[in-house]
Amino acid sequence: MENQDIEIVVIEDEEDILELTEYHLSKEGYSVTGFVSTHNVEQFIEEESPDLMIVDRNLSGMEGSVFISYLREQGYDIPVIFLTAKDNDDELEEGFERGGDDYMTKPFKYKELILRVKALLKRSGVKEAKKVKFRDIQLNLDTKEVKVDSNNIDLTNLEFKLLYTFIKSPNLALEREYLRDEVWGHVGSDFHDKTINVAINRLKKKIDSSGDKNYFTPVWGVGYKIN
Image 1 (tube, helix red, strand yellow):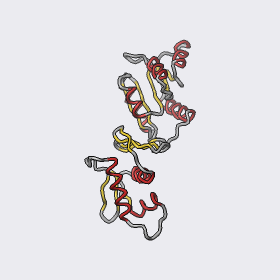
Image 2 (cartoon, helix red, strand yellow):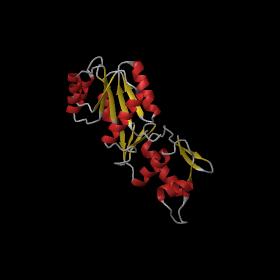
Image 3 (cartoon, rainbow, N blue to C red):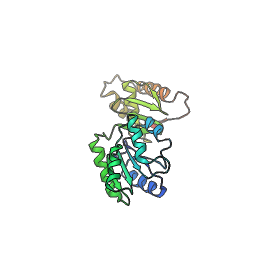
Image 4 (tube, one colour):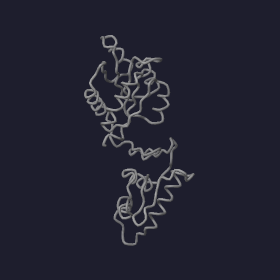
């Protein structure tokens, strides 16, 4: 789905609400990671750079808006929607002052939450194709950065294009002619299939130096697929 490149973090200590929120966001195609407390959240957002956070204020341990205020002090500017039963004027003002961008009081309708998520992402200028993930590989299409298991991998422009071409079609066998046209362009008749083999082998060594992840599988008589 078109939203799958957008990462949303949900922090909610009521597990039934957390599961429902994750379900409705996932149904819209978003990539969602849920937490029942603020524990480990900072480490996660440092590694994954999510596009939006949905945070309950009434968390056990650190109160949600206090946590967001702390993140703002650390320099994180991720858009935040607060979920809360706190709905008097002073509490609303407090939430916004601590770094909230939008507010929903419980109980709420998930249709409205989805609409608010879409509106806040649009206001924040989030590009839907900014990040692409496959297994433990993450591509940033804006910066051309590649991470495998959170480790930066240095790829050439051609290798990046080759990897992205595979990730756009996971588990599908891609013909050599298709790879040639997508990655190398419409080259002349002197282009050899061996060029594709060499490029894929170089790419495999960079993203899977130990050779135990088996990202690529040759498909006899067709080409290759990533799985």
